[in-house]
Image (tube, rainbow, N blue to C red):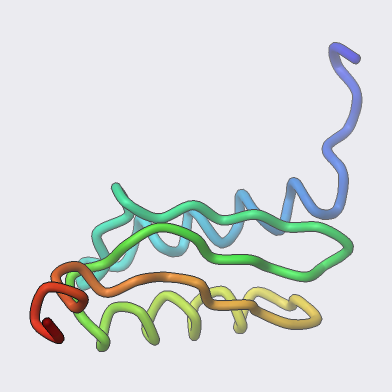
Length: 81
């Protein structure tokens, strides 16, 4: 519906993405943020454990009910073989 107001979940997703883009320590290119009923699901890959948990912290601080962090750390599977 053109011109319809954004849903609460869409506003949460936009807020999270804006905060991720504004953080100089986060590379958002490989990150997908999905929000449904105020529950956030993080998908994709990041270069480090530090960034994985930094992204989760940003999402958690956006006023959501819970965060499911499915982000993968790039290169981890190769290092474990």
